[in-house]
Image (cartoon, rainbow, N blue to C red; front, side, top):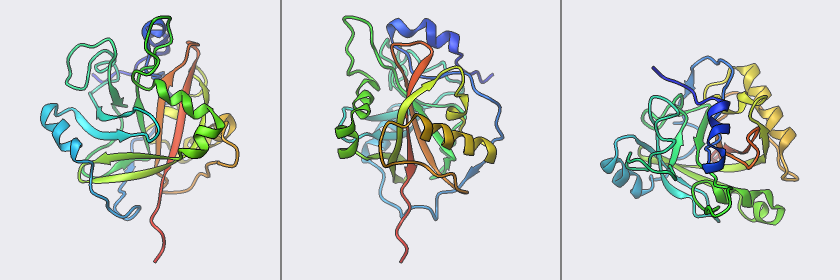
Length: 238
């Protein structure tokens, strides 16, 4: 049975690193094809290589300006890859893994593609493992110079523009990790992303057919997580 990682689990794993997953409100499952939303760019060739090694690989994530550049795994729940590496072997460091509700069938993406990764904050641990370097986006100069995220799925690569960086409440902001929010939930997701955003001059607007990418990881406070929200870059009109 599919299961969601609870806040209690996130708090229990804080001292050894956590991935930012939490409980969420219910949502309707629905996805919209991206076929007309972005001109096709070829997928990162490393995606096919990673899929040959582990069929649970669903995407390749690249965050320029950081060391985050690797395969994304997906299981039938959000617990399986908490302590497994990209090959599915037991690992304290874990890997990048997508929320189990996200859709990666063909070149389709969910309304909100959510990817988790660990951040290690305890003394003696390496802060650069997993999603640790996402903290750099809290710096105004860094976030101004680095505005894009690339995600390869199936045969194409999508470009997302970072719109919001901030600290979310793990207890109160479950809507940020909904893969297929209803319209009211999508509006709330966007409102909260703008409310916590520390990047001046950038904000989201809720629109129909919108495609978002959310990167979530824990902080040194068990009740909070760092959340980055990016929006799919649409092709220019001809």
